[in-house]
Amino acid sequence: MKLRPLLVTGVVLALALAALGRQAAAPEAATARITREVRHELLMLPYFSVFDNLSYKVDGYNVTLIGQVTRPTLKSDAENVVKRIEGVEHVDNQIEVLPLSPNDVRIRRATYRAIYGYPSLQKYAMGVQQPIRIIVKNGNVTLEGVVDNDADKNVANIRARSVPGVFAVTNNLRVEKP
Image 1 (tube, one colour):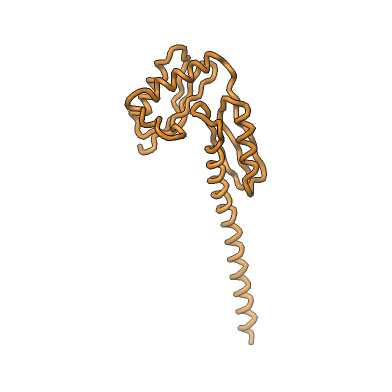
Image 2 (cartoon, rainbow, N blue to C red):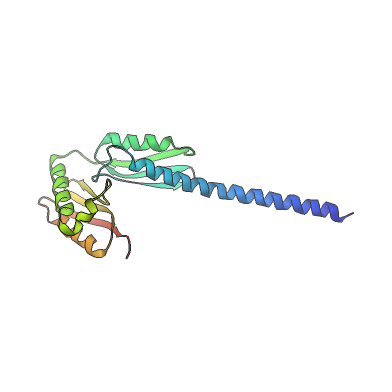
């Protein structure tokens, strides 16, 4: 007789622990889904180009947008599409709008030609979204993105430094397969 209440208590306790486990897994699944959707939505922005760098951090149901863009509308568009994702509660938009400068525009174009026009780097020009991002701010060039090997990283750096009018180059390229 005394075993029955003990058995019922054990079953209830096991069910409660299982429910807690499912609740703990739900935020991980939701975070993974939000991360996938944020990436997709940012890549699908119509004016997102090789001269823009967008990244994000997902912390539970909060998303922080970071990076640099050449158009102010791209900053607001990125925030608007992320806000519409189901489950996103708050968007912290820390995207920097790069200053409008004819010299920076010239350097962007010349750097693009220097990098993507070089024979060993032309493979990166294929596809819609080029993996090497060229960010120019006040004559300073920052390379962001992913390349296949250290040689390509170094060649991109050398090619960017060869552009006339460039003050400094920061090479933040990551090697996909070291």
